[in-house]
Amino acid sequence: MLLPVILSGGAGTRLWPVSREALPKPFITLPDGDTLIKKTMKRALALEASSILTVTNREYFFHTKDEYEITDETSGIEFDYILEPTGRNTAPAVAVSALYASERHGLDTTLLVMPADHLITNHAAFDAAVKKATQLAGQGLLVTFGVIPDRPETGFGYIDRADELAPYGYKVKRFVEKPDLDTAQTYLEAGTFYWNSGMFCFTAGAILDEMAKYCPEILEQCRLCLSCSPKNQHTTELDSRTFGAVRDDSIDYAVMEKSTKVAVTPCDIGWSDIGSWLAMSNLVPADARQNRFKANVIDIDTNNTFVWGEKRLIATIGLKNLMIIDTADALLVADESMAQDVKKVVQYLKKSGGDAHRLHQTAHRPWGTYTVLEEGERFKIKRIVVKSGAALSLQMHYHRSEHWIVVSGTAKVVNGDKEFLIRVNESTYIPAGTRHRLSNPGVIELVMIEVQSGDYLGEDDIVRFDDVYGRDSKQC
Image 1 (tube, helix red, strand yellow):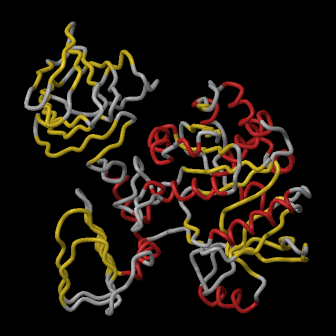
Image 2 (cartoon, rainbow, N blue to C red):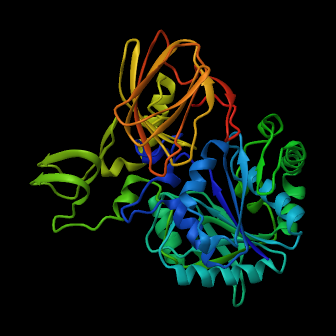
Image 3 (cartoon, rainbow, N blue to C red):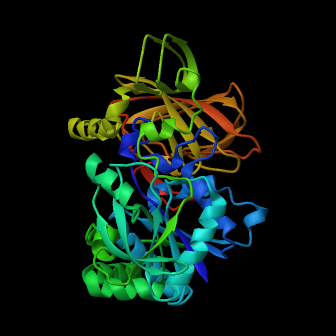
């Protein structure tokens, strides 16, 4: 059987401030309205597999399920999840996927490993490439997808081909790191080099055998981790202690660059890793002056400029070759030639403290979202949206009190030893130290304004007594 494996864990630092650790690159809404992870799931569905495995951080689990929007059309598909407590790169992710697949489906299961944050526009060519790759995988080979280059790209690694494995691909001669421009031009002219897409195809047995040869410590630690990890029918939450001890390494370095059983299937599939704002800008049609706007823009004498905005009106005057990325709490302005250096901003933010590298003003939770509207000394104001039928945990705060006002919908409230409903324009006050819970018993979204006041208003001031989503982290 063919098992698509979606790896969703990258932070996408070069797409800050839209991509952040709490809501990274796979969840960015593209100009066509879809997210990258949803597009990846749709590609997996089109392969008519009976099961899809997603490996992701446990903090992204509920948001991932929301993005998949599992409906009656997909009710016959098994959506399985492996939840990582922390990112350890692709080698451990592949190891736990192969171990999981071998135990659940058998060693001859063919894994199609796909990053959740890549874009593919030629679906027919992708399907054809998958069929070729599965043929090679059936011969015990580890197959990588080599994208046929159309320019001397310095931002990707390359694969150099060797002997032909007609009609499905070639043996791999070597992997090479990201080249300088002159070297990339040489690769393009040679005609034997492909971009390394980061997609793979192999049987569970084949990749486990090669990992046992070339990175046995990663494989055995992952095997130990799985044996210690709680499982239900479709979800495995990896044990944090044993998974944290796994060596951080990519599958390329750990296995693919060492194995003698690696093949490449060349493909021209409209592939992009959307690795920068420059790549993202190419998804927006250009006007007569090569401007690309995904925002409400007034432009005066502006040329070759990309603007991405959310709500605010943005006016540009006399600009050229710039990227402007505007979010509710952060603004990025950069020369387009510096697109790869956006990650340096994230590095600076991590060192300087604060949450601008990690959190948006709007945070996603299993039950809905909250948006910080304003905050200052001893107060914070949030807009809370609770999905129909959803509920926050039964919780208590030591350092803050809360005042809830219903804007739309109906709220079911536990406040101390009382339980009651509050409706539009009604409110309730929850003193610090009081057990409380908020839920939405209605069929429409519940929208509320929450006013917090107290000596400490951090999100980690929470004692959780009961939670329908099984969370025990310090998140509301």
